[in-house]
Image (cartoon, rainbow, N blue to C red):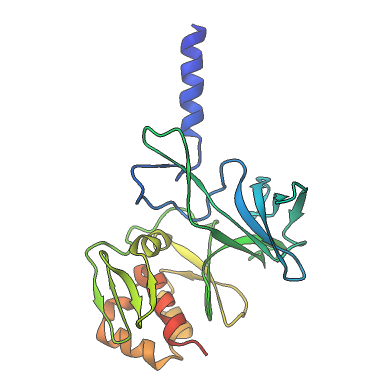
Length: 251
């Protein structure tokens, strides 16, 4: 009886683990914004702008579903708890366990900035999905995942960029983003967006036809790209278009 109860507890414990901690192969994408499992490599940005490398762990304290506190261990072994009001931001990696491999691997670094929360305006850490003139943050308060994402069949031969599932995103001769990164960022029902460091706004599918003009309408290069490939103006391609905008329309 005790043995059966132990199996039940272990099963339930596995079911309660955050999504994204297991992957089928080395190419599986992990959803952005997941809390790391235990202590992971990372960094913090102090209020004076200095960056310290070390290891960190989330305290699992949230405001409006955003983390507000981390425990940081510096390379010299010193440990301190920081809140979103004390530092400018932090970065961390995630652990992923592959099938039949007890040793985890680490994802690329995720970057969090201290931002005012949408409702209360208090400092929180927000997961920055994209940097540039248009900064995109994960809206952890959004419920559900978008029914349509950037699909593997889509391909664009733009004027200033190209995109496909086998080659990823190319802008000019040097800039490249892997397809899986764009796909992992293009799965949500809404985003929090700041343009030119202005106030955060929520970008949602229902209002996107109006919002796209405010976000991208000031750049002739983007207007030309949309004219050549009208489907770029669909909400599912928001992250792709934002990344192209940041490269082609940088001031």
